[in-house]
Length: 75
Image (cartoon, rainbow, N blue to C red; front, side, top):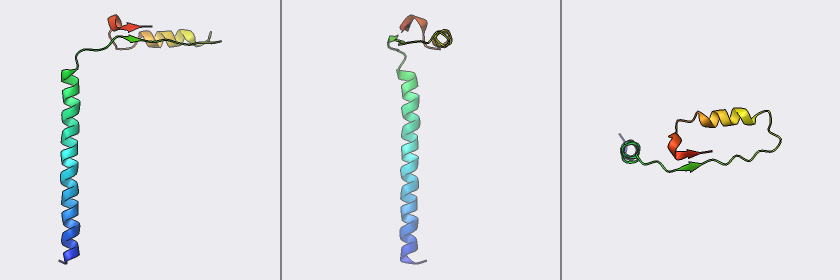
């Protein structure tokens, strides 16, 4: 193998190690954010509507079906 081949293989190995390091950090971040964030903030939703007689009912129905805790949600 030539010197250039060794350089290319080295760069590919370095890239693979970086990607594994990045992915492990991403998995750890997602896992920690799910476990460590049980507190959810209060949320207020303000709906500005003008001439929306036909669709406002569907919008309010969809907002009421959210999975966010109802005690923390204000529409």
